[in-house]
Length: 301
Image (cartoon, rainbow, N blue to C red; front, side, top):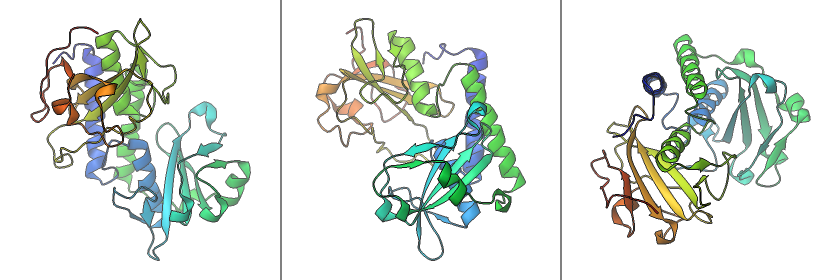
């Protein structure tokens, strides 16, 4: 694998981040690579004594002993934002839960505010949190009890994240996606979109051709035994090509493929295995994943 794109210090930082995230996994704080969301769910479950929902549940995240359902959203505030708790939340289904929990963190994932908002306040699939909500629905943080070792583990994870940011490896809390975009842009000399929430494409080449980049972390472990890994949100993209990147346990590249978007016949339910089966797939970086195949080497567009 050509992982020389990262310096020795960067590779050490990635391995440290992997170690920190695995420690949170061992404590039951997280179970996937959706780090901020899962830390927020853990905090909400500890504060309100909730049972976390199964991962297949999409409209709520946890339940209490009375069967009431809770949707949890999390946001990290930089130092310059510490007093700005405005938050526009979308994709909600308020008929499916009784309370919306919002957890605000500082950059070290220390909770600085928790809100508990009744779903009766939410009239559609979006909700804009304003100052009045912070006055009416703020919870007493003194009641939050977290074990010391878990506090330390979360803080170490936060410091590892900050180091990745300082080394220009990532540019948002979408850590896996950012690292995959870093690899793809360096290998293909692409310019990444200025917006890390660009809906139609992630990068362009010098000729203006657009690319969508999807990244999945794939390695042998008890948490990743399944091979049915979804490639979400491919429908309605402006990109001409899809780049699929896989990362190993230490976030180093373990394979990269390029696929014409027009060849993807099921963009709503595509999965990682399409790199094995679709026509027109080319390998940019050889696969180090046993069940993902090398295809004809990519030369140029």
